[in-house]
Length: 301
Image (tube, rainbow, N blue to C red; front, side, top):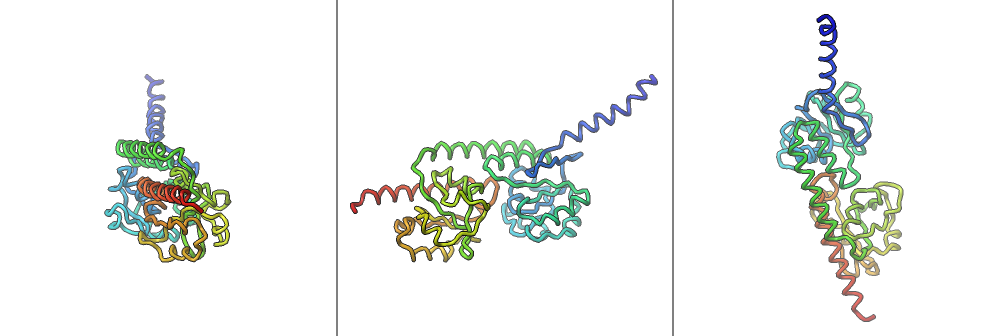
């Protein structure tokens, strides 16, 4: 009995440690994030992480978001704790979070580190591949205790992704210029998630070889690459005025064949499940450019 009495507290500690360790994941920065119980008060520090949390079934547990967290509509009514690039650590702490979901490349590192130093669990989200969106859903569902919803959403996302691969793989490549902004002229390199979408749709990113994730390029480089389609995003779903400026260069294949398109940036530039909706739009646009090239090839020179 004496030996059992001695071991019993150790056993309790062991089983408590096992239970706590059950809610543990690695985030996109390679850090281990562990909670003793599912998060009940979550602060989201990027629009895409807000969407991920809602999609993972944890929307009712969000107690703070950053500006531009506009989807789903319920997110627009949540308290704002700053912008992604200018957080208010004081406002975040005031929300008494038991989990903060941060954006590795979009938040100010020192501001997030303040939260970590206060002992607040922080999960860094940085999906760089489409598959990463599905795994983010699963890990956030685990941390929030909403795995059933998160797993179902992840399965649906993967199924839609596989369907796009089936529908567009093996098609003739189309030289594609994706334009984020005009002044300065900003695009994406091959490591960017948007470049993966271009490849998925049978496009060929003309600036894939550049080192910077979202590089600034000059107009001469675009003209030299002669894109067969130009897709713009900007800051709103409306067609940006600067897209029409390409009409100045009719020698460019995309201009000559009138293959200038726009995609709602909320659909294509957020690493969340809706990105596949943006991908479907992009694939249809690239397919139209591919068809225009076929038609152009039939015309005698």
